[in-house]
Structure formats: C-alpha cells, structure tokens
Image 1: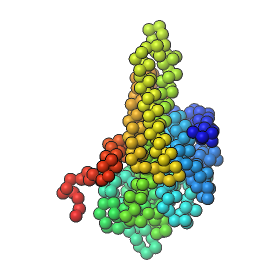
Image 2 (image 1 turned 90 degrees about the vertical axis):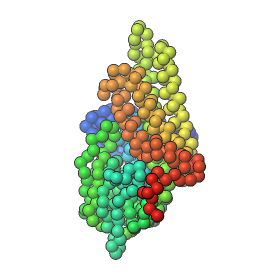
Image 3 (image 1 turned 60 degrees about the horizontal axis):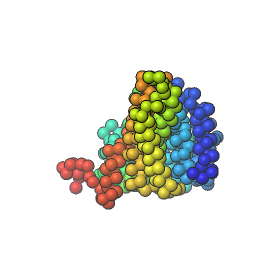
Image 4 (image 1 turned 180 degrees about the horizontal axis):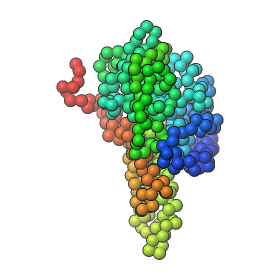
Length: 388
C-alpha cells in the first residue's frame, strides 16, 4: 500500500473500532438498518465518494482504495461497510461508466454526500443464478418507460431511495432484451414486501420489490436492451466488493482467534501451546492472506477501470469459501463460546454464508472461470430449452 492508502486504512479501522464495533451486536440482534445519521457520517468522512470521479464530487480514488476502507469497516460491522460497498462498488458504478451526463450529474454527487442511496435489482423469484430468465419488463410509452414485475433478494430493499432495475426493454430472448433503468423508490406503483428474516445480513435490509405499471422518464434508462454484457462487466466490480466482505470476515475470525487462544487455558496451559491449535491458526492465516492477494491483484489491475473477469471470479470464489471455512475454524477454536452470541464468532459465520451467495455463488464463479480459461461460453440449459 502507498502511504496514503495506509492512512486511509488506519482511519477506517479507527472509525470501525470506535464507532461501529460497540453498535454491531445490537444492530444484528434487532435487525436495524444503518441509520441515516450514520450514512451522513460515512459521507462526511469521504468514504462514500472514494471511487467516484472528482468531477462528480468524489475523491477519484482507485477500486483498491474503496476496498481497503470496506474491509476495515466490515471486520467490525457489515451494515456500515455495506453502505461504502453500495456507493463505491455497487450500481452507482454502472451510472459512472455508462450513464448519460445528466444521470451522472444528478446521481453521483448526491451518493458521495449521502443524499442518495442506491441499490441494485437483478434477481427475481425464478431468476437467480440464471439471471437472463428475468421477466420484469419495461415497455416504452412515449417518453416514458412503464415497468411491471417484481424483484427478489434485494439488499437494502425498502431502505434505499433509488434502484437500478435490470429489466426487459424489448421482446428479444435471453440477454439480448435486458437493459437497466433508474427507479426512485417513491415512484407511484413501487411497493415492497415484508423484510426478509435472513440467517445473516442482519442490519442489511432485504425485501422484494413490486412494480405495478411504474412510470419513469425514458431518460432514466442507463443501459439499453442488449447491454447485459456491459452491465455484467461493471458487476465484476461489485463481485470484488462481495469478496472483500468475505475477506473481512476471515481476517476478523483470525484476529479474534489469535487473541482467544492466548488467553483461554485448558489442561493447565494456554490453547496456543497445543500443536493442533497452532496448525489451525496457520491454516486460517494462509487462507486469509491468499484471498487478500487474489482480491488485490484484481483490484490493482482494474485501477480506475474495470477488473479482469477471470481474476475477479477466482478472487470471489476463493474468498467466499475462505470466509466460511475460516469462521467455522474460529468457532471450533472458541468451543462453546464460539457458539454464543457474546463472542461474535457465530455472527461472522452467519454472515460468511450470505456473502458466498450474493453476487454469484462459488459454483457460478467456477463456471465463469472455466469460460474464461477456454475462451467460450458454456450454456447451462438443456438443448430443448434453448430458443432458436
């Protein structure tokens, strides 16, 4: 890291320890979304505009700069880190890369100041990993787009005030008909389902979104039909954000385990004196370091632009599985205490599974890795399901 990045990391770590660590357990227990005052705090610190270009009110930092801050916050409090995630690696980046000048001027500065929060709407009840099966439609009616359908598993659903909705903008099959539209949450016809009660992600709201003849200006179209490939090119940035959440969980699990095994005594000596414990800690550290290097490789090579899809999928696949394994090993090292809410290990483990699902599972990442290695797409559908 550069001296500036080290300073950024230290500032984020201090904020995480002093501000968010004391609140994280309560927010998880009560499933409390990040309060608006805390969004404003993150904005005032400059954390929401790290990767937003300077001409749009941001700091013009690199992708790695944003991930450094996200990791430090996520070690203590995933809801706080998620706000940095959404502003720097989420749907806002689609607007930065492909939006009109008017869209950029309207959205990006307000995201940097915390005035606007934006979430992404891709998944549907019958379109998860098979995203191109989505049925939500946006038909043109004069100078408006009329959206009908519903979205599921929307992180920050019902809490964000703007959504980037992926939908079908024409009748073409598969990816060819899909584009993306900005939809403000207060638009007539937009409604939300009950908040999901998830195993983890508590404090990060999730809810279905329903679109009943929702009318938005045609100028809200960010990517026209046929731009699905472009959309998922930018989605590689978001996947590095997912991977960094897993990295933070792994690092926090390791840090807490290192402290615990030196304090906890059994059979008259500290746990760290047992060779089996040493081997477990060493294995945890190896996995965490490998995940960080894979993430940093993809982020550094991406710079201010788009990362290499192969490097992103390798990093996300490895980091997601690392987060689950390392947090599980931490629970074993803590014994019964690891199974208690008091020590926070079970919270790390619950969240690790969520980040391995969000943004494309490890299984989907392996499909992407194979596609990149062989330079071809592998259609997952049976022949009879493929339209001519």
